[in-house]
Image (spheres, rainbow, N blue to C red):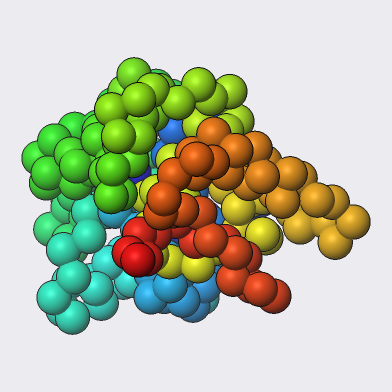
Length: 226
């Protein structure tokens, strides 16, 4: 799934992002409600994990705002507040679940999976199809035209991220952050190198390429037809 983590404590945000990416999710991180609104508009996440105590307000207020606007994006609230009344307030305020800090990462994963099952979120992500390219997320396999494509773990992660965002141009910065958990370094050509690896395996010998370069911006996976 595409998950938005709204957490102002850098260590916690980094821990969550790293762990969720290792589980195969795409992760955006926002440090406050303002950043979360921007990420929601640009990244269109499937689910959000929101800390209640943000620098610019209560994370629950952000969830209430989304619900008033008609958004049904599933939301899991994180908080250091242990009182039952506050957990009830969160659930009645539009959160789909509530987890008190400190928490077990395994429990967080289980709660995210339960929310996804209830809402149907991410069900389609078990299998991603773009033209004749098919990605089996659970089995970590990809094929094109029925022919399996041999991929390394990193190549698979890159192809999956591009496919999950099919038709959307992704910058090198975003790709580095999601696939390598790295901040952009203008001196690195890591993304370009791995895209060339993918092209050799996914597009070479095919009449219709799926991987395209948008000069000065980044890369996009899409079927442009003839």
